[in-house]
Amino acid sequence: MAIKNDITQKVKDILDSNFTTEDISYVPEIGDSKLTFGNKGLQFEATVLYIDLRDSTKILNKHNKTTIAKIHKAYLYTTVKIATALGGEVRSFNGDSVLAFFQGTTKTTLSNAVKAAMQIRYMIAHSESGINTLLAKYSAVDFGIGLDDGKILCVKVGVGGDINTKDLIWIGNPVNKSVVISDNCSASEYIGISSYVYSNLDDDVKYGTKKNYNGQDVKVDIWTAYRILYNGSYETFYKTSWFWIVT
Image: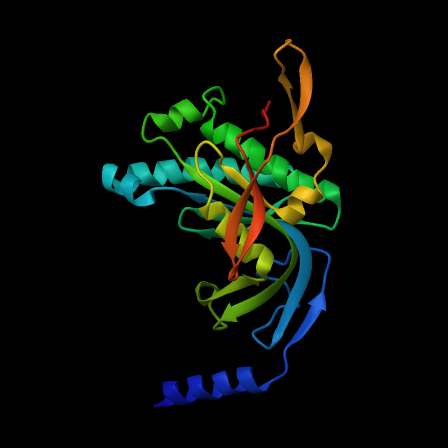
């Protein structure tokens, strides 16, 4: 009975109280003193990078659990190392997916997020990366990366007193849309971006060069437009098979 009353009272307090937000210029962490279990959230602007493995069940059925653990550790280490090197901050692991934020409002921070995606694509999927052949000894790793930009609300949830019963959740269209875009990407077009991200890219991650029929280098758009159903209507998003070499 006490548990029922506790839950009922807490839910009533949550739903009946006003919710306040504070704009910040950084990506919150679980220990942020501004985040409590009260009705308050922290809002920031960032480019969201979401990556998710494909065919996880097939991999799980093909290998024992210790091999799966090694594959995940290698894939997650690669993703986090590249994202953080380019200014991203990883905040969520959910099974075989990763959520990273590139905080800021400039074309540079946005383009760094896309560059990180292109470097992750190179390291995991390119035969010359050094780790692709190592992973392929176990299973070829397929994945999708989605990116969008905008304002995100961070809220602390759970029950206080134990670190294992609390977490942060990330609310906003940029998070949801990056997941939907990721779901529509796989080999060989591993990376997808929203139309907003596409419209604000620096040239070095928007264009590349190819040889024309005369053998001359010509500038080309490396992104191809597609349509995606999001929030009940179709929107344009862009995919690419290009990558960024990591040295």
